[in-house]
Length: 369
Ligand SMILES: Nc1ncnc2c1ncn2[C@@H]1O[C@H](COP(=O)(O)OP(=O)(O)O)[C@@H](O)[C@H]1O
Ligand SMILES: [Mg+2]
Image 1: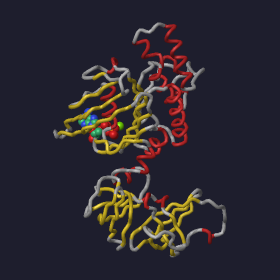
Image 2: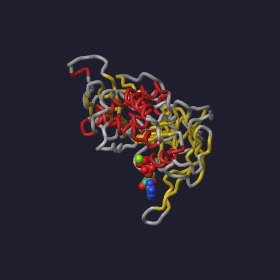
Image 3: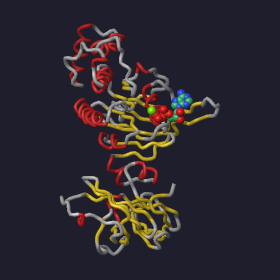
Image 4: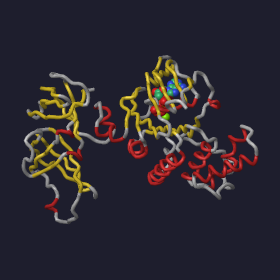
């Protein structure tokens, strides 16, 4: 067994656009995906996710670099000789075939015997909880059930790696959330490596062991959900995943991984953690997540504490979203509604003065990009 289930080494894929110019859809991507891992590629439309997946599957070949599956360089190996299988976003079931026939199709093409096919289809349908539905036609199934048939069709070939390209994209929100949990459970149960493509950050955060955040054909950061969210290494990632307040500043001093940053708009210094190497004089962006800021009536900490006034406060059930004006800068703060009360005085009022505590470990100093 190779060290990694799938490995991309410095992979580039260039296309010639209809206008005749060259486009690097995938630009020097290196990734190592472990056996049994739920690995996601996350990024907005056009960032190169599908192209990367298609190269792993063998539908496209890299312009430069190499792809290894289970330690073996793939070169120009055709899709059917790779131990991977793909579930596409548009899962296009054969409408004139029933569930059994749809799932069995790939096995028949391979010349698997009738008995063996029956056994394997039965097992695949059991995995996706469609036992007993074998005689139904696609139009007699809900969207979620059709998606499960597509999944069974890929699983029936017992791939070592399953490639999933936005497989839940066509489903409504509630069903999508259910299927996310089911897919994750199935992956853990089967121990198959999943490489999952999505533009939905919540989906990636919920399901993945590790996430690669992509933009413009490049991987910007790769790591577990907590790392990507709590320790982004670029402004782009901090902005793309979750929400954040950003302040422009200049590094005043550095000590270990801590940096003191002058915030000109506040005429104030903030102490934070440098997410990348910084030096005195660097222009940086300071990022603070809205749920990490504490609001109090008086100043609680010596450093990183500043007064502001409430511009608006919105009650949204679990949380209250408070927008503040802090010396001319807009800052958003999410507070959890821990107590249950109808007393309006318990909530923030427009114009109310409050102190914001920005704990050092939640104040992230990022390169300005
Ligand atoms: N066959 C192709 N010919 C030319 N350009 C392509 C081709 N396939 C993809 N692209 C371009 O490559 C970029 C990445 O596309 P894609 O991998 O589909 O992105 P994603 O799946 O992240 O939305 C896009 O700009 C897209 O227009
Ligand atoms: Mg795509």
